[in-house]
Length: 97
Ligand SMILES: CC(C)(COP(=O)(O)OP(=O)(O)OC[C@H]1O[C@@H](n2cnc3c(N)ncnc32)[C@H](O)[C@@H]1OP(=O)(O)O)[C@@H](O)C(=O)NCCC(=O)NCCS
Image (cartoon, rainbow, N blue to C red; front, side, top):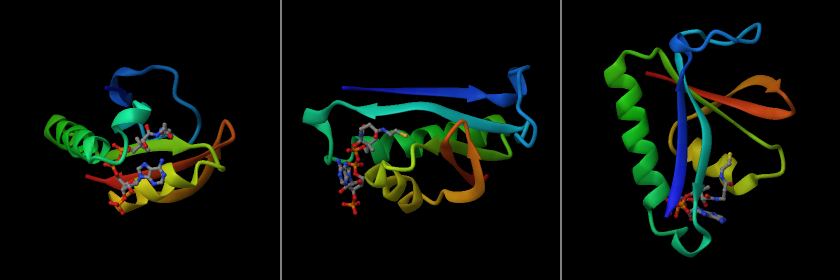
């Protein structure tokens, strides 16, 4: 149905300058095209954010390619905001936990 990949940056030893070392980072997020628009992505995100909060991460972060307006709206609707950084050509988003 879909795929979600999360990294706890506290367990990751190759951080870039400016990365939040206590954040959880969403690396991959995709719902199969035939299953999109039915609430599964929102539900998965709520679960992932709760998982990070329960683990004690300070923030929940992801990044999105500039042209992916649907994904950007999706993340903003869930409470993530732009950090102002562009990392590896992607817009970085974060929410405090
Ligand atoms: C972005 C994505 C993860 C959202 O998952 P989803 O299960 O389709 O989302 P939901 O059904 O929970 O819908 C959440 C909101 O996103 C909107 N939405 C979802 N897919 C959309 C699309 N393709 N185009 C426009 N809006 C979309 C929904 O309308 C909904 O908005 P609403 O609450 O105002 O009605 C999913 O569409 C996807 O995998 N897209 C392709 C891969 C991708 O872009 N991943 C993100 C990379 S950073």
